[in-house]
Amino acid sequence: MSERKNLCVLVALHPVDAALAERLGTDEAQHAAERHAKRIERAIMMQGGQILFSSPEQTVAGFERSDAAVHAAGEALERLQALPPLQGLRQTVRIGLHYGGVDTDTAEPGGEGPTIARQIAHLGGSGQALISGTAVMLLGGGARQLVGAQPLSGPPWSRVGTPVHAIGQRSGLLTSVPAAARLSSRLRLRHQQEVVFVEELRPVLLLGRELANDITIMDPRASRQHARIERRPEGFVLFDQSTNGTFVAIEGRPECFVREERMLLDGPGRIGCGFSSTEVERDLVFFDIV
Image (cartoon, rainbow, N blue to C red; front, side, top):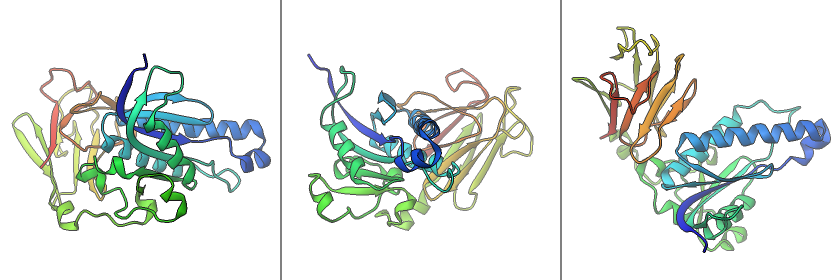
């Protein structure tokens, strides 16, 4: 009997680009596609997603929460945009998201979730991430800011059977969340007996062993200037700049390891600077959005 569960499914299509293959050769174009696939997988794992299927042509992942899937899609696009073009050309990547049933006991997952997510991805343009209205309805405020307020219109989108919205700043679409609501949120951090906030008046907070940091971590595994947290339009973002990396556990998700990369802090959780956030450790940093 097929095992079926409801997930927010992310489908990333990254076939070997024909234009790249013609200009660079098949092997080089294949390498470009594989490099893009690895960056997509990394973004998925950082947001607690599970790789359900991967091939040279596509990556399929499942998320318990639609918010995490949206953040993974946005992170993947930013990672891919950071790659330099190859002789003026870029690898084609399209991303689609939909919340629905998934059959997980087959080699390639089936069900409504992957089917509609794949259909949406095929309809999008290269470098674009799209999400179904079904998944949008399940988003919290932080992730909702990354989704266009109005669904896309036109014959291709009407055939999907659900409204389709664009994800990410590249869409140029406005959020439906009022600016005042975005400005009112603060990230509260607790370290031992100290409580500090990342907010409009203090948009950047520093963590590390040096006493000059806003939060001083005494553990020897922490770097002197270990990490920083910035208040950005997309939310509160942690940037690791350490030797041993930063461990982040957001409530309800597996722990993520961040090294010389960044991660969105979109829920209550814990930070370990150079050590696991699961350790019973006096230098753990606890955070939540208030």
